[in-house]
Length: 433
Image (tube, rainbow, N blue to C red; front, side):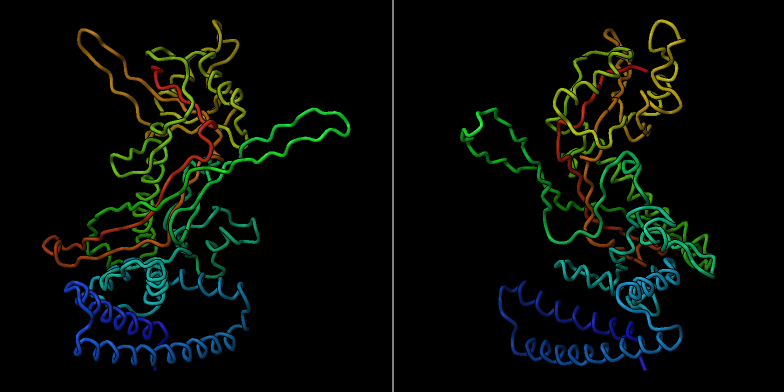
């Protein structure tokens, strides 16, 4: 008897065959001809039969699990089963299988979960693709014991010392308070911003006119990001847990860099989400020419937010490592006894992240030299939203890089960046280090 995963793989191939028949007819701008219609209906009969077999097999497999280890019930049982699947999942084996278009075992089950999510979102599923479901993209929080293990608890294995990595690690912008949505479905996601209500003073029984608070805001809209990587066959053939984790980590870290970088300095001209630095409506410091940082310039950014009644849920600073190093050496006042602009990795006691992903403006030499200019961003990062749609798709090409004994893997994901309240961020882009 075939396992449910194998049956699902057969069903996926037959659905793909139906899709090809439809695409061929659409390319001719016609309906299915008689031969195509007959083949389409025959495939549907087979699909209906497979649906019944899959249901029966899934029920039988659930019964077997209940005998083996006590019947899991409800959501906890489903989560537990997915956790066990992830523990056995081998990214190297899955990529090799994707190159042949044929999956088996737990890799087939996970691929089918991801493929079904894509089909539900009206996305194409290639025969030679590995599809990671949204539940494996990442944990919402990297904790082990908190929240009854609902997030990081999936990383803890009771007996086998095996790490189950999420594809996208926690972003450093989340450390500053940004909100990350994963597994989004459908189209744009609105981020409403309410206008303030104004109170009116009046006599005891005087009628006060009603107010309507406007609700408007930006939307998260899916944008495609991808990468093409070569992975050697020798590396993929390793069964070592460390090697498999490393492959997943390398791919996931690249996705995390893409999201962090776009959130900071993305440009729509480069088909990216617009980042904080290039976003219209962000508050700007008074400084418009190069100058070294001073205490007044540091706290000016805080004042800009306060004067615009910006929120203060998760305020913090973001800058380049070079600028933060300079701030550690600059006294607040003429004497170092008053302290330095940055101390213990913090600026004025606020959470501070220094990253090379914060760009600088290169120095200009010649008759009118200008030193390298650095960006200092201050804001309430709870107003920054990062959205990621569905799972991650890996399309595998086993032929193009065959001469170098490697697989070519195309990684695709959909994501977007938005700031709900532009007045919650302020930037000085003219500081020297």
